[in-house]
Each structure stands twice: as structure tokens, then as C-alpha cells.
Length: 169
Image (tube, rainbow, N blue to C red; front, side, top):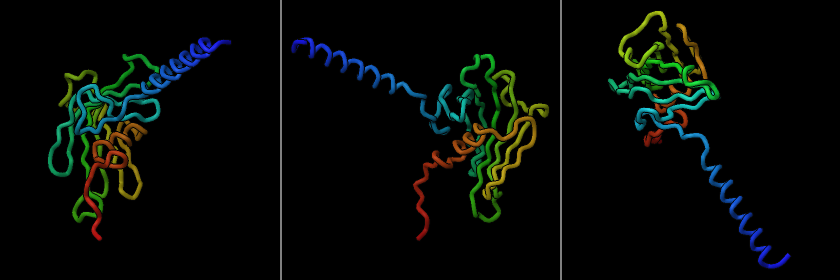
């Protein structure tokens, strides 16, 4: 094997490494904080569920009342299996007097995005995430990994915590 042949192998190996590196860069989309998300952005990935923004969340009162619509798609399933959920989140403050001791997300399933703004008692659900770790679910949708993660995103908890506040010393 001559020097030119060795260089050809080195060049080919470098191209393979570069191609593999580029394909590794095409990993799953990054979760977007709800306050920065645009329609179609991934809000939450939990297990095989991908939750994207279908209608922007609108912040409400200082307690973090949010209203929006999400699309939940299971990886490997056809688009027609995706579900739309109208979601409200009421985020509380831990250890604050006269504030609830839980974060509250609730909503209902929608057949069509045009139905946003109307609530159906037939598809209504609510999940309370108590600060002591307890969770209460009522209605047609029970607690799931994606609801846990969406609550964290909407209430800016866990990896979505963007607070610059520092504890008092």
C-alpha cells in the first residue's frame, strides 16, 4: 500500500467520522420553555410522548394562570392519532401564606383547534401536584409523564426553572 493509498483511506475515514458527527447533531428537538415557544415548538418530551404548542399559552394573573392548547403525539404513531388538549395551569408559590400548596393543571380534550375556548364536561380533567409530592387526578385524563413535565414547563420548575432569585442568607 502506497502513501497515496494511505491518504485516501485517511480522507475516507475523516469523511465517515464527519458524517457520523453530523448525524449525531440531528438528535431530538430541544424542549422549549412555554414563555418562549412558538406554534409547533416542542414543549415537552416524556417517554414516547411529544407535546407541541398548538395555540399559544396566554399568561394571566400573577399566580401564573396560563391558557393554551397542546398537541400530544406518540412517537411511531400516525399524525391522525395525535390529541389536542386545552390546558390551564395555575402555579402556586411554596411556603407562601394564603397560597395553595399545589400546582394545578386542568383542561379538556378538543376535537378541533377551532373549539379552543369552550370547555366540555365530558372530557374535563384536573391534576393537582402537591408540594409534599402527592398528586390527585380527577376526570378523563390521569397523571402521565407528559403532564408532569408540562406542569414543570408552565410553572417554571425543575429543569425549566429560570429564576435568578437567590435564597436569603
